[in-house]
Length: 63
Image (cartoon, rainbow, N blue to C red):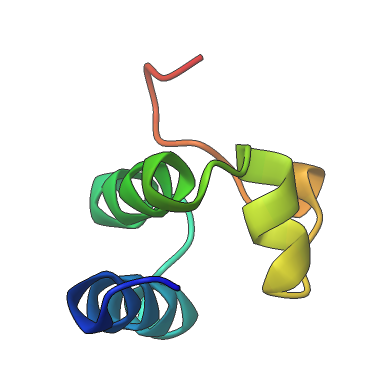
């Protein structure tokens, strides 16, 4: 069972993404951190938020 610290961090990251502005560096940093934490790739995290990858631009200069 995941620790309460893990669950708090995971939930905080999901909340930040729901409240964040897609396409900003801060959004991408949060998305990357959550992806590492839960072992999901970017498209899967975006899908869980109800978005498709083409609809969420990456910041300028990111692959």
